[in-house]
Amino acid sequence: MTYHARLNWVMAITLFGVIVFLYVMPHSTEVQEYSISAMPSEAVQHIRILTQHREVVLHRTEYGWFIVQPVSVAADENKVRKMLEILKAKSSHRFSRENLGDFGLNQPNLQLFLDDEHFSFGGFASTTLQQYLATRDHVYLISPHYALAVPVDVQALINPAQAAVNR
Image (cartoon, rainbow, N blue to C red; front, side):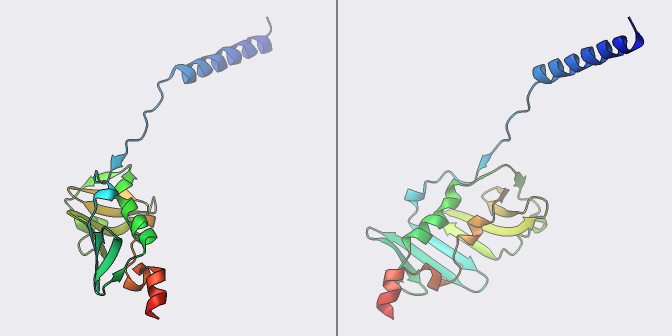
């Protein structure tokens, strides 16, 4: 057997070994996801949105959602539904609430109260472009679209049909 033939056999056996190793190698487990809340959105009766300058309060009645503070008017059901999607959010990162300043949560710009649940929206993680959210005993990393779904201006929450009547 020539030198090149032996070299080809060594390379073939090595390649076969690598393929067998990769096939038999234990696969990594799935990323663990943490639920932000266990409350169903249908159970929520009161919503309070708190920013550094405003407070908006909504209540659910048998006729739908109504803004009760700072004005008394029907709320846009679609926007309320999008806001309540935070209850279904999941995160692959969960941290202890020990150092809230590290997450931009010492003085959050936006707080959302859904009945007894409190959500504080903080800063952003520069590596994942996700936003820190504090609730109960933990801080989570979530998509920033959840904070964007919370209208901070009461005008954006008013039902469009109701707004047309008031003009």
